[in-house]
Structures are given as C-alpha cells and as structure tokens.
Amino acid sequence: MSMPQSHTALENPRSQSTLENLRMPVQAKLASAWTSLMFLVIYIDYFHLYQPGEIDKIRGGVIFEFDISGTLMSIFFVIIAIPALMALLSMTLPARMNRVTNLVVASLYIPIMVFNAAGATWDYAFYYALTIGVEVLILTFILRSAWTWPRRTASPATLAASLDSEPLRTPQQP
Image 1 (cartoon, rainbow, N blue to C red):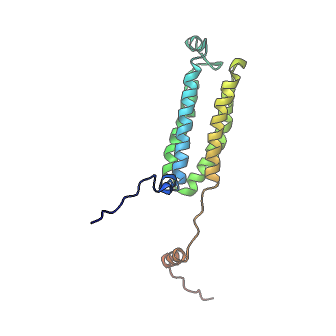
Image 2: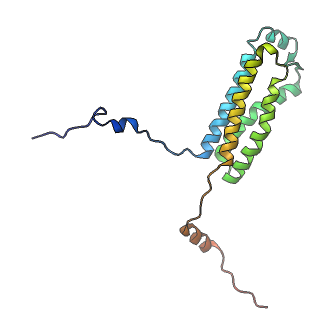
Image 3: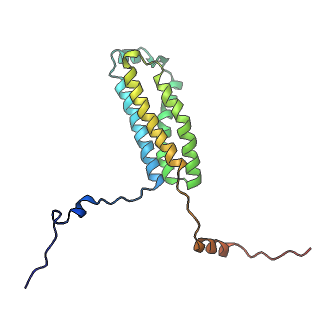
C-alpha cells in the first residue's frame, strides 16, 4: 500500500507566494485611518513635552504660546474627540452620509493639523514638518477613500425587486 504524498511548501512554491488579499470595506479603512490619526495627534502632543522647557511653560500656564484656560482645554478635547467619533461614525453611518461626513470633516481637519505649527521654533521645524506631513497624508487617505467610495450597480434582479416593492399606480383619468 502506498501512502498519499503530501506536498510541502518547498515542493509547491506557488502556495508560498500567494497571499489572500480580501477587499477591505471602505468603512473599516476610514475607521482605521481616523484611529491612526487620533493616536498620532496624542503622541505628537506627548512628545512635545520632551522639548526642553515645555513642562516649565505648562506649569507657568502656557501651551503652544496660548494661555491655559477652560476654553483652550475644551478646544484640545474637541480636536481629539472628533477623530475618535469619526472612527465610530465611519463604521455605523449609512454609506451616503458616511461619505459626506468623512469628506467634510477630513477637509476641515487639514488646516487644523497645519495650525499645529503655531508656536513652533526653528530648531523643531523638521519635527513639525514630519508630524504634520504624516497627519495630512492620513487625512488625504481619508479623503481619497471617501471620494472613491465604490458605487453599487443595480443588477436586473435588484431592479426587479425594487419594482416589486413599489405600490401599483393606476392611470389617472382626466
């Protein structure tokens, strides 16, 4: 009796090089991009504390040349809460509303991210250019993903089903 031979990856190199590439839903792409942006903003602010003298300025009541106040802290909260909410909304809103919301919010967020350069010093110019550049890249990805959201084409079966769900219309007499 002969035993069936099993093929190893070395005997069948094709199985080694072929990776499964599933189509990722647009909602998941958007939610992950907003989550990435949120974490990036948090870490950029955290790393800002490593700059010499920054903690002393904060203790003195100033952040990024702005006086620390309830209003400023509320603005900071909103800046980080919006990407957190967008991650949630990207997974839960209906497609059309989802697309529009992502296009509007990402468009508004680009100038907000660029404004992070306010109060930057020349010795950290590369740091701010790099961090703002990555933030804008993520927002550009969001805009592109929302803008190119795939359209579903109606199949004959879908059209027939939608016609079946419409009420019968009787011709009106003059």
